[in-house]
Length: 69
Length: 254
View 1 (tube, each protein chain N blue to C red):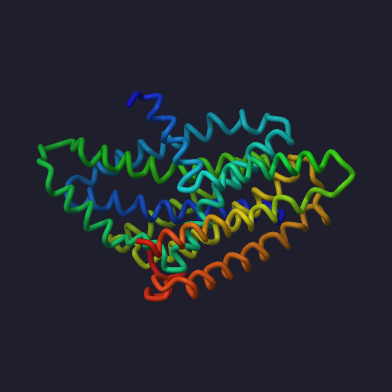
View 2: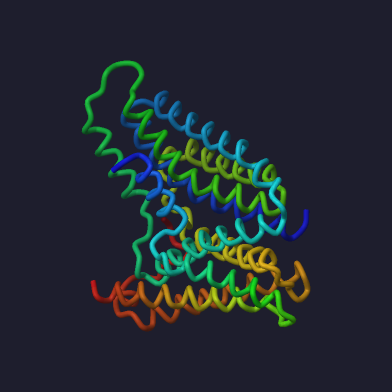
């Protein structure tokens, strides 16, 4: 493994961690917040809802994986 | 000190305490079995590298436009905080093993005894202590930079981190053993809640949203996220036979 690949993998593991879906979900939720904020509708509720949904989904998958072991 | 600054200081202090407890175990293991001077030199070199990282990147981050900083760094803080929170919930529910400082100390000590040693400076102790402190400290440096930069208080964040290191080092010197009774998962739980809450608040603000009540919204976000996270712990414990067969762990050591 080259040094660049190793550093890239290290940064990925460090920031994204065990569940990449959570990181991707946060990016989508921020984009949705920005889009809604450009309209006349309040956008503050998007991110808290997304956080709870992402956490619930990630924990559900981890719990299922734990039970299969 | 404002509420947000207090949140910053407490979050960084707790995060740094947790990581310092884990780093202390490694330094103690190589120090007691091989060479104190080499282990402390390694730990000191790692601390200097981390301080240089914060001092080097801090001013650059704080000079970014506030909305770019909030959406970018707030988003990163949220992703990072959700990692901490997810792991803390799984540990509290019994689905993930707790970090056991006594077991880590025994493992490091066994490994250290298995390597031949020459007189004088011990490269093994230096390298293991350097790597251990650097790896544990990187997470704290990341939190100091992201959390501190968002409030333009990198100095306050660094001070809170320094106080935590001082506290853990003093306790380690006093008892000369791993701090196995430190409530690591409870502290990780608290840090996960704080990072996720502040990340949510700043990320949404940076993306253009306006919070009802402005900064006071944090006084709702933090307790609500805490309540939901504790509910997740209870739900997992109830739903998972694996989790319910293990002892309850929130607040217990390592």
